[in-house]
Image (cartoon, rainbow, N blue to C red):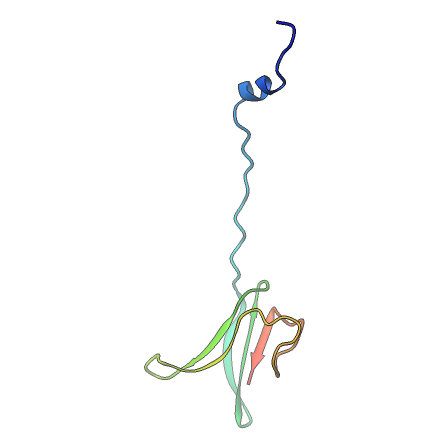
Length: 92
């Protein structure tokens, strides 16, 4: 046998497997905190990386009474949120 198929050595070596770690899920680097700021309430938090976020205000029974913001806000977020501050969030 003069000609050896170049694929044969790979088949004899067994399957090639690349280990790929799944991405680490985002987490809070600063847990959400609400604090009174004059006549308003300021909510602050920070995440480990850019991610979708949603801010809901609930009553004492756990019912959503207000939806403030959701999603990755991009370059033109609504005030008072700031562009480029995807890892930190604050809302009044």
